[in-house]
Image (cartoon, rainbow, N blue to C red; front, side, top):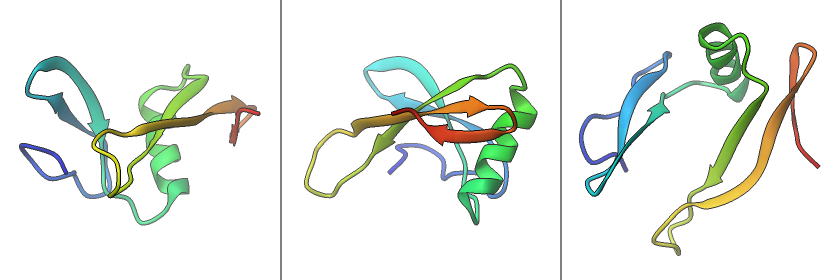
Length: 79
């Protein structure tokens, strides 16, 4: 759960990563993964890789999972 604002609906927004860490990350509430990826592609047309995380109720911190890499116009999991 974000500690400050809720995720923006249908668009990317800045979100603080944590109180003790000054890095920020993007967040957004999208109906589908395809909409989220289209938003990222529109905002960052040169992006080739997206780091992905899995959030579990059993873990205190997110776990890094396979990133998505851009292949032409598609995003696919990096094997």
